[in-house]
Amino acid sequence: MQNTVQSGTTASPAAQELQPLETFLSSLKRTRSKKTLELHQKRLQFLAQNFDPFAGDVSSECSQIMQQYQISLEALDPFRFTNLVLQMLDALEEKIKSH
Image 1 (spheres, helix red, strand yellow):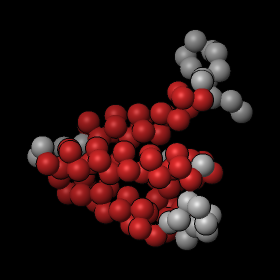
Image 2: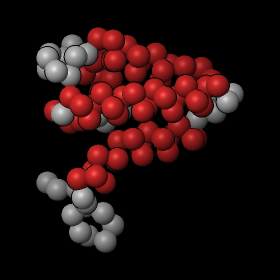
Image 3: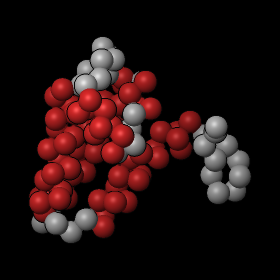
Image 4: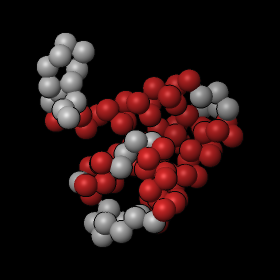
């Protein structure tokens, strides 16, 4: 199944790449609780420290975190996955600092 934009055309690879990040940033804007932000940060830090996208071995904890943030498919490209997780962590850090 292909990802499509609202006009019904196939989304470009660049647009497909941004979808998990855009979804995350959108939900981040609605989050008001600092504790919730810190929990997201802990989960993503755990994922960054315990999952090697180049090795491909996924623990059940890492798999659950990837499913929660809808980034499981991103792990197929280790470079894109690493970049995405770092961008998510950066956005969280900025949001926590602004609280």
